[in-house]
Length: 373
Ligand SMILES: [Zn+2]
Image (cartoon, rainbow, N blue to C red):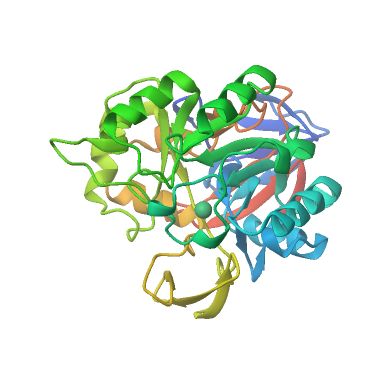
């Protein structure tokens, strides 16, 4: 048994001081007791929380999920530890059916073999999106919603970002709701109006992907997706808090309205945790400089955001309290996906992160094992 002592433990909306976290592969308890046989880890006053859960990430460390190789999955998994991430949804891109199939097949075979952060499922971003709002997704490969191309992989798919207004989307969502009700259907890369968005909430959409990005802006006479999501308490959403994708003035505004329905994501691509330079995303050239990743035409192409930096940005530009902030990257995304991770709860996996006041990640445990320090 291991015991983390001398930590400020962030759990359940509180920060506990003077307690110890006892764990093996799983969390045993949070207690003031310290069994003499425990292997003691002194946190030196650092914060301790559940490991972070990123529900939208394409790559990092020079590797991308669409590389469709076990080596790339391992690089991403290892690289993400330094950002405090212990679980993530491997996120695909709009590419040819063959490329998507290769990426999904690779995940099916190798997602459980990675030795860093865990791959807890797949987020399919496209190809069932609207060409009007393709963003950095290659419009050439956009398709009508179609179960066939993903039929063999539905058990591992946890989330699908789609445009609910396109032809075929309604039947597609109805099928998934009936047969795979746990898959989160998320509106994104969509040109839906306010009315269409509202309609989609009745047809299965429960979440919005990178709110504000790849959709029409909020307009007071046509509130669009943003207005529909902000006005509906039962729809959750996520934002990319890199200070580039949305103005930080919106952090507090969206949090005030959405509360526990707001999550953070990175949407990081291959260049995450890497130097400036030229990379690719979905087969397209991406130039990374000064913290921005853009296609040659200037379109934002995912991010190079680190998850711990997203937390720092959001914290510095909003009035959110630390326990609520940490919930946005732990308990809330886990609950949205229906996964028993993301909380410092008895019998939950001991996925733990120690970080300092500046959100610098100090140590990361996955399933009770020290994997980053
Ligand atoms: Zn993305």
